[in-house]
Length: 323
Image (cartoon, rainbow, N blue to C red; front, side):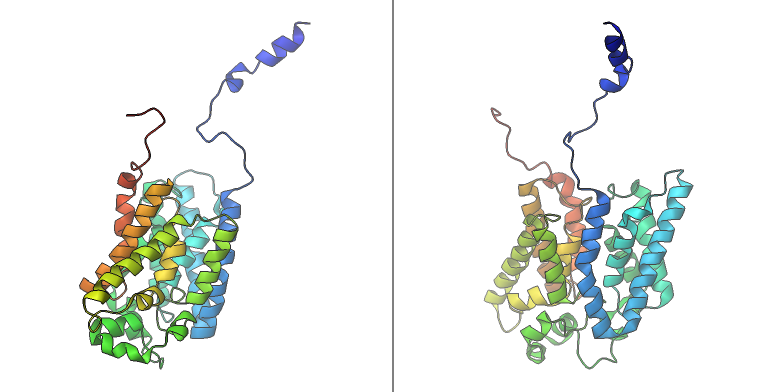
């Protein structure tokens, strides 16, 4: 009768081990999450090919490949298990490519993809530990180091259409009469390789919301922040400031709301912190567009909001019984 007791107690150290929360089992994995996100951005990739030609596919492929190779090298140098089959490096490489002009040179794409992994993730400990959205770190470095190569309007000047935010920044509201809001919604505007494909990005974002891989708090609050801030300026002087619908459809607003701001590592966790995070980031987009030197304020706005995430995570309801 004693043998079952001895057998049960033989691995008592394992049985008494308590792992970190949460303690429930789930079929949701990083691998499946990244598969869903890659599927969500696929329409924007295809739409960018239709818009800019096969050169956009080359930029996406190069950025994703270099990011994966860089991740492998970083993991090997750190003596860690190589797990690039979870698609995180590929996904973030593609996100960086979405912020580039379709004619970006190969060296710029490669340097940016390397920086996305090394400077955006590896130096902080790897995936899930980065305090700022990794593709935006690489974008900011390249934007400040090689502004001419990163300039959307300059590198895509051979296209007959214009970049709406550049027109607003340099020629004022009067120049926006050339844009039709339905055409902006359908992606007929110059912008980042995939960040200006509004209808495709919206479809991908709704897919992530519908499948439960993305919570609605950050995207909805982000849109409200953009709309509220732009409404204030527009009501002050509609002849000088663009209306809210323009700010929602132009540039990388939709891309930022669904794919950059909700980054799982650099955004807050709770419902109220996420709402505040999205609203602050959305408001800063318009402020940067109005007062900043860069036409599209989405990347810098999200990066600044990322720095507030640790503070916003402390904004939470009091526990039951707390004073």
